Image (cartoon, rainbow, N blue to C red; front, side, top):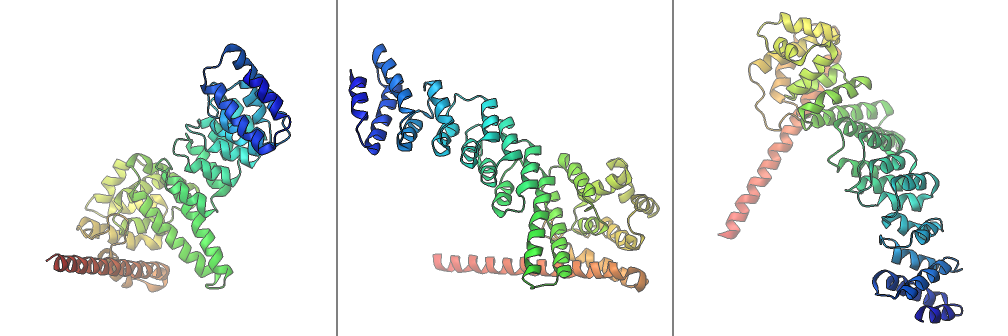
Length: 389
């Protein structure tokens, strides 16, 4: 009997040769047409090899049996309880585990086991939740990068809460299509805080200046995220901003001056607790009384009313048709608002004028970038045509 010869040979063979022979035995068990006696003897031999002193032998057994639904369950369970480097391939591939087994392994296993489970194909939601809750940063990164993993929004939020300060996890999350807009905005906050702390720590800028720049960048990114968010998810983003104290007059004014009317309307509806349709009617009504009442009910700073009023007037006159979609400040709108506000009481409007001037500078720089980009693209086309001719 072949298995009897194998058992006699394995007692004295070197570890590397035992590992190679073990792999061959396991493959023969899975794929060869063995007689019933040889089949039973092969299983017995593999059970015996679980006690082999060399990890090479046990790892060879794990690699050979891991992905097979025909592997002996007793051997798979024993390998899963072995050293992490031996258990990892079994946890990564074996179809014999149920969800509860995997959740328990995430809770009790080490980093290699968690990482192996995170990489499993078609990972169920409950297991993903366990990794998000107690998994290492590496296992959470593998989970986020796993395109077949079923990750609930709450689990994604938990990963952001625990590891959102890590660049690799932020980047991986932003590449996923199923990350809600509110979570994307939280990732932006995490990034801005990290950058502001780094810049201030290097003494490149003072802390207050770094925080202001980071805040402006966050508001700009928030408007961009909102512009790319389906209308059905926009209110959830607004409520997230409101809960975090980020739904400020500055952000709402930026949205309006960027032509992001949907974000502006939803924000006003949230702040006034009014239906969006009613808010839209008051905003687009030709008179100013309705919008003033809406503004007061939203409890926005009174000093910002002139800017909102002039922006609404510009909106009604159609001063929105500039390149950049609803993600970029509109220079013509800002200049009009700034001109009208400069004629008012400077003491009262000084902070607003400072904000508008920052907006104007940002809009001018964005416009210059677009213009230069178009010039370079046009020169490239002309050069390509001349070469082709």
